[in-house]
Amino acid sequence: MILLLDTSVLIDVLNNRRGRADFLRSLTVQAHTLACCSVVTTEIFLGVPESRWQEAEHALSRLLFLPVTREAARLAGTYRYRYARQGIALSVMDTTIAAVAVTNEVTLLTDNTKDFPIPELKLYPLPQD
Image (cartoon, rainbow, N blue to C red; front, top):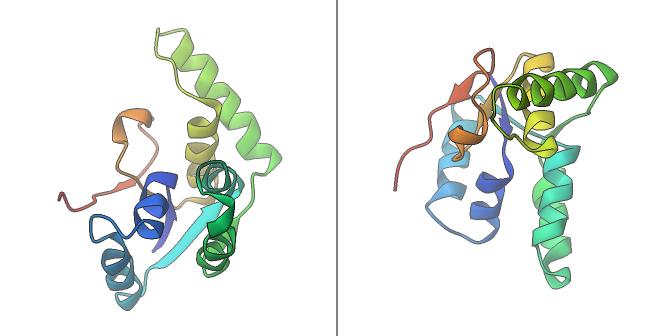
């Protein structure tokens, strides 16, 4: 199974929090493939101090990279449009991550399930602290 990592999971790994690094290692031992996308990469470099950019790049380079295709970009826009009409504000970043997962038929690994109310999106359960 390919698992698209949300930014929150990678931030926890980079900050050695919540046992996330060990959890991700256990997933790879179980033959899961870990992935990221351009949005996650962008969010990582928005939040990591410049002194840690090399470490962040090393962590990201070990992941399968799933691009934001035209299909995913269009789907992300339709998600924002559809949910906005229901009074639910979703970010462009989150809808794009969701669309990358859906168009690639992969599962999203996130702590922030409330940010991803999209029924066709498969979510992988994270262990609680």
